[in-house]
Length: 237
Image (cartoon, rainbow, N blue to C red):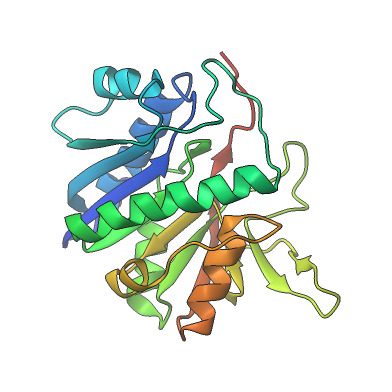
């Protein structure tokens, strides 16, 4: 189905990168296709990572034509060329907080109408941005999370959470559009949100720190369960 809305707005799609040259072409093309299908014509990409990272060259060579890509570099002390393993300990979470806040600084300077923070291991469904932007337009949500599963082999951990009384995150799977406490990995933000909410350290990840800050500031977070986006959790070359 080739659905399009007439959206006379700019959409910036951004992410930190680290040794993602193996997936960046697919990531950019899937995101661009989804944005075009949703009716956006003013589309751009923003990538941030260590200047030694080969992802940048691959992105420039293979990214969608006639779509501007802004490259930001910031040296990472923990960077190792060719290391595609996932290292999620507290020091890495703190590093990601700094990196994502650097990205937000640049987003604020570029002033897009909408900013999609999209992890580079997420390949968007063709209708993902259509569904998220429609929900944003039709609801009182200030930011929308897209659906993916954070586990490689199950549907137990969808990409949202509700804070439980025992301190954990409750994450029942659903196809509904719902208000949530936490969104992660795929986050479509209005200017009010990206201009005012920074990332903060949390022992479970910087997306939890960001979501908690957004809600404390009075913003409402939604999650779109209509379509499932692909989470590629390892180098599959």
